[in-house]
Image (cartoon, rainbow, N blue to C red):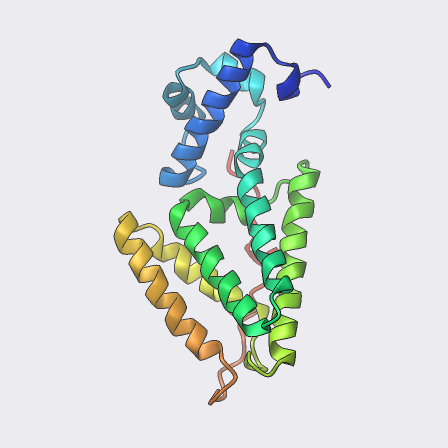
Length: 211
């Protein structure tokens, strides 16, 4: 199809890749709100070239984070394939939280609605449903506390996202500590009653893309 990377001239493909690389770096360090002009400057191209390759911010964001979403889906798939449901649950939490810290833009992109990006939305739904099954298996095995709710995952992601704004090494160490603390509290052994889960769902956290 016209405009697909495989049909572009070599110079156009180079420009496209430079834009993607620049956007990936900018989103990772500054979040999704970075001006498109800053992305163009970082890529060494003009605004006309940027918008010719990516006509909207949404198209650039979904292209940049498609690979990360695929990795996130593979993390969930690995957890489902793990014969030890608790180990799979724990590994999925640890890996996703590490991704959050490594790339500030990832959480924003994951929690932003892109209704026109059908493949992106489908992949995100796959991640959410897959993780729900990871949770079900860990509960059925008697390893995850029975009152664990998906809202607890939302709380973890929100807390870890706040940590991710600090200096890289400090944020990584703080995230590992937070995740270790919370994973211990998620275990079924010696679990004590908790206050009711807040009404947090992925649908409520997802917001329209910034313009």
